[in-house]
Image (cartoon, rainbow, N blue to C red; front, side, top):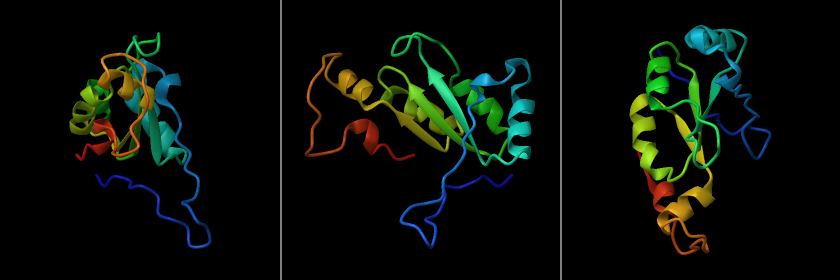
Length: 134
């Protein structure tokens, strides 16, 4: 099934048109594939997948195995929001599972790179988590 791509810049604007990306976190997890299909049938091209590890944030939610399972049922663009400690550790797993985009909290990546210590961001080069190419 063909998958949705990143939106293109609108001809009359300096940026792409806004994209609505409903979160699947509010779904009935017993019927997650059906809920995703329902959102797409109602017009969503993207689905927002909140990933929480119980450490960076106190809640524990969805992981790469869920994304992999959902990918078999949906061509929607999977926008995975990694609210995790050490996000670089998870990028490959989510890429292989079928995530189209992953966003993460830069402070989590910086803390992981500095052994959990707070520090200054480097302006000379991107953080290794940002450099990843699938």
